[in-house]
Image 1 (cartoon, helix red, strand yellow):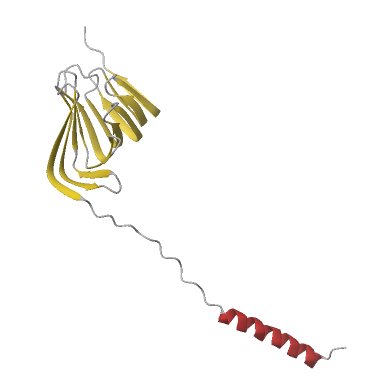
Image 2 (cartoon, rainbow, N blue to C red):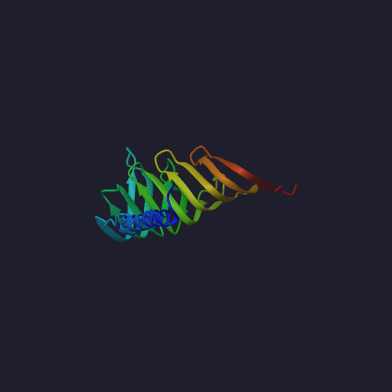
Length: 187
């Protein structure tokens, strides 16, 4: 049998060995996350750019107080962008404003913060649309949002969460929590 003194020395040796092994471990520093800071390829102040269709008619105009273009990211960022869309006759049909915006190379504009859309023609099926976020495809005129949306028209006012629609086809669909108020003219 092992006497108590030998057992005590064996336990003490194992504890010392464990402390020595744990004390010698050096913890690897946490991996530093690499943050990319892209520099714009060019900047513009008071930018105005107009696009024309195949027949020479204006199709859209983009204005911005300040813009940066990043070739590597294939996108442009805008401060206080204003987007005008024109009808087939070349008249301003829609005006969209926001605090910030991003234009991708596939002609998709993402607008954020205080997005406001105005129907500029007397025949516009809506007067205004307000939301904090809106995606607008400049080619197809499709619009999308996943945020709160308020729409005002001559005959109704509606609000809800989420939107998909098409400006040219005069179609909007609220995706969730939609409700509307319809106005009746006096007869």
